[in-house]
Image (cartoon, rainbow, N blue to C red; front, side):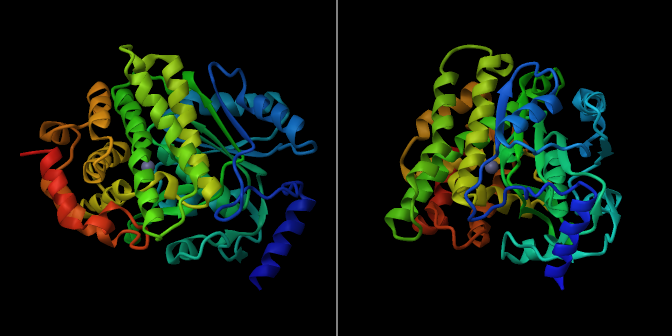
Length: 416
Ligand SMILES: [Zn+2]
């Protein structure tokens, strides 16, 4: 029946012109990366840029009914302008404001994007995990749009990406923040209410366009967002140490190209940070950071899981997140950066280089730094123990050397 729903979906949307015979790239285990990845300054018109690139690379593929998703803030920064640009191109855009990355917001917006037969559903096909299967059914009715744009920070992009996945439509990511690599990844972090905040499988974006001028901001949280993006990127260095360890212990095969892709940006950013410049507002540095985060996300799409960018430090983040009832106080990037420092200490590799980079950007390197970032050291110690329950089949330094060793690392790196 659900297979039939999918066939009905295709026929309906072919008739109305919303289905282009192009299914958005899917993970896992399908070798797909975004068709367009662009980082630049003052891109005059993002819709026009995408249109021109698609007509060059995928002739016959054009989208005239975009759904643009933003929040109150990013509507002003870029959202409204993009809607206007679509109108000038003769397209028929619709727009939705999202208030959060909660699943209830997705449920609110989905029916607004479906004209007929909104009750038709097909199973989740991209992942067999229980949470993906519970939430990931595809909506099959006749659609009002043929592509979804997400314009905003992490939670806008996550929500828009999941809406695109649920509608089985391609997704274009236009980030206004570089706080983590999620803007280019095939995953969405969604608040599932009673099930907590989880990372769900979505589709790889069709296009990722970073306009550095949209990212730069004078608001109070800007430097923290950049710092967090650097933290998330540098944490790939220990994620790869974990993956290589798993390879040596015959737990999981290490794939060198995906591994290389995940760490080369981190190494480059470390090098750039040695130049004593104001990197927060330096276009050259921001471009390198944006490209490196895209490369990190692409490594995950390429490999078909988060493994190239997620080891013990990400388990620790999830564990801490759960202990704080999903209100960790610190950002994703700050927490994984702290985890990476513990991991590098336990691996006996790269601790000093990481510390130096953290000092330059203002990531925590001592107890005071933890407190300043909103991290509770006692809870962090507890999270090292509960991290064992997160992705237990992913072999990391925690599984290899034990909870006590990592807790000792915490006392050593961040002494009271
Ligand atoms: Zn991350």
